[in-house]
Amino acid sequence: MFIAMILLLSMAPAAGAAEPVKNPDTLTYLSLSDADSLDPNWASDENSALVILNIYEPLLRHAGGSMTTLEPVLGRVVPTKENRGISPDGREYVIPIRTGVLFQDGSALTPEDVRYSLLRTLLIQPTTAAGTLFREALLGHASARDDKGALLPGLWEEANRAVTLKDGAVVLRLPRPCAFFLNTLDQQVILSKSWAVKNGDWDGNEATITKFASAEKQSTPFFERANGTGPFQLERWDRKTSEVLLRRNEGYWRKPAALKRVVIRSVPEFITRKLMLLAGDADMIFTDPSYFSQLKNLPGVTVLDGLPNTGLSNVVFFNFSASTVANSFIGSGRLDGEGVPPDFFADRDLRAAFAASFDYDGFIAEVLGKGGAPATGCIPKVLPGHNPNGRSFKMDLENAAALFKKAWGGRVWEKGFKLVMATRSGNSTRIAACQIFKRKIESLNPKFKIDIRVVEWPSLLDAAKTGKLPLFIMGQGGIADAHDFAVAFLHSKGLFPLRQRFSDPAFDVIIEEARSELDLVKRAALYARLQDREHDVIPHVVLAESQDVHVQRDWVKGYVHSPAFQGGVSGAYFYPIRKE
Image (tube, rainbow, N blue to C red):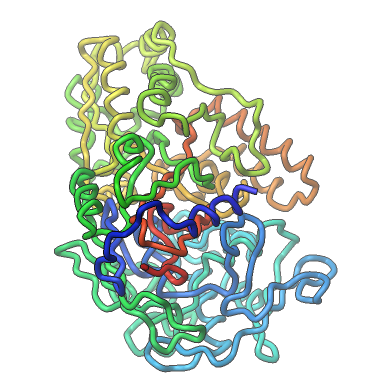
């Protein structure tokens, strides 16, 4: 029902909207941060995904605002057992490839392009761990590499057996049934093999996999260039001004988009974004719930709040073994009051002390507002598998002090520490969370010092990927399945545990069992166990759940809120949007 309400909101005319439409053929979106990479294998943030998902296309996509219904895109049909696209044993999927589709360089989409793109995701795995969920479903491996960075033995052969072509269709063979497999396909966009090879990317052969898997982020031709089949094509990415320019793909296989151009510009300061919106120089702006009171009832502006999402925006992560290579984030690197040792957070009492020091109720009441709610773990409340009876962390400063006195055999309380807590620039909600931590923890002991370091998004992401951040706040979106969040937050090969240098075999066992459990009741019980252990181990702390907010000018029409869209709720899939 909420989907229908959102659609009605997005199409309803604004009262008194007589102001002339500014730049009617161009939509300007003001983001919080710049993209990190335009290579689909490298991108693991919503700023990059926003650009990628408007240039490239997957085989299937979640329809409109649905979290459960898929629609065909470059695939001609959504496979089901009824249309014989899924085998009776649930292990083989056949997806016919759409014909008559052109890449933006004028070359035709072929089934070989689809096969190449999927193999590239499965085998060419950079440090972002892109495609983890897709790889796990199709091959049974969350990672393509062993602990030494070498390709897993036999993985090339497994991948080539798993992805084949037959009569103009791609055939995908799974090692065992997987309840969420089709949902992973909406994130696997299709590249042009010939363009990739011509521009120096992987040639599709086993012998060159290692070379490209170990390449630097900016060395891939897809880093700042693009050639997709989507409704928009890349005109320019100016990294000096943090601006991406998209122009309409006139050769798009569907009706061309209404908008001729889209400008995505990074503007970290909220007041600047707000003033540009009011002046009509921006059509959409990034926001978060903490700004809601400053945006509602503005003339010519529509604010959609209380929007459901499949993400967790405010999570504090502990690094269990921070890098010591040129790392200013750990200060002296010792427990001497001037820094922290690399394994500072390997002590469970210390993590528990931090968890007991945060004012969760105050954060919800004063920062998140009516959209905030206590969190019970890493699986969002909107997804099956969330445990509504799970435990939440509570602020208890007396217990926090006792835990600090136990941590590191008493040396934390005795010596004190100077700790950097990092978050992204421009995100007032996360900055406020850092300030709450700083205020509460420093009040317990004058030897405790927390330095809040606000960092531009690409730099923060690089520091996280290389394991330099001892303590940081980030968030994560995901597909409409609990498994995605379980892997990202708790699996030893998941996105955040890799950044945290954290591994717990017990989490892996539960996640692997829940992965292929098709009985919803049994699956929910497994996830309840997972979230219970998450609360005990404390590899991270989910500060709260929140709802989303979307802000745009009244003259923007056709926006549809899609909880499954990985490009962020403030941005959009721009194809159905027009200005009038």
